[in-house]
Image 1 (tube, rainbow, N blue to C red):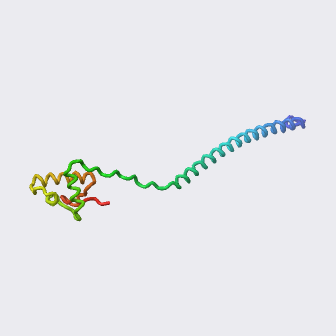
Image 2: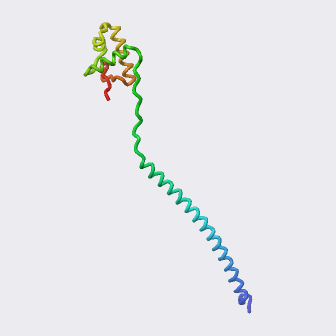
Image 3: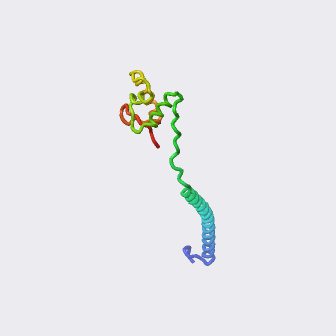
Length: 140
């Protein structure tokens, strides 16, 4: 036998060694498969949780926009009178017309004071200024 030839014992030894290598690789692969299966199960449970949450949220009724609080009217009696004038009116009014309806003397000072009050009420959302100096009551 020359050095390049293998004996039956050497071939069997190599086969045995190769079998151990394959068995070790198979065991490592089985361990990886077990780890990946566990991870896959975890991901499946997490995805199911997301699906349930999405379904629950989609079944909730739409709350709509939040209701805005009603505008607060200032305590001064003049504001009460002004809102009463606009409640009775069926068209937009100017400061001069509001003075006349309140039986206040139609003087520049009084008109300017009423105009300031009208602008305050418009700023609070109680009245609306539809055109410069022309006010109307907001109606629901």
